[in-house]
Length: 140
Image (cartoon, rainbow, N blue to C red; front, top):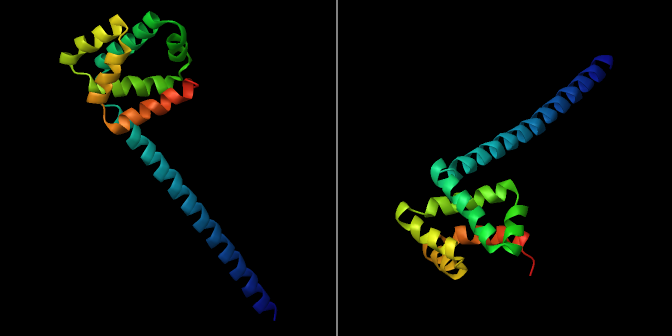
């Protein structure tokens, strides 16, 4: 009888350890998968050259400064991540040939021209992402 009790207790302990191992294995697997996904997303996003991103970032700041008021407040209140996302999207879609066109919209404060340029040159996904970012900072 004593041997049987010891056997049952040992079996229960082994099953508990096995269950803990399986649960932790699944948790570790999820952590690794989410880490890999985040790395892939970061790698995928960073395709524009650093020079283009610097030029675009300066253009955004210049545009905000020229428009002043609410536009300036919105740009200044943006999180660094959102500002980087906006800069990245624009830098990926502005070519050296179109840079002067975009710069003229910015220097003239031509919001309509910029919106038209965005509709013509950005994918629907990029437009949606920009609109989601804008919605965070602009209240109707």
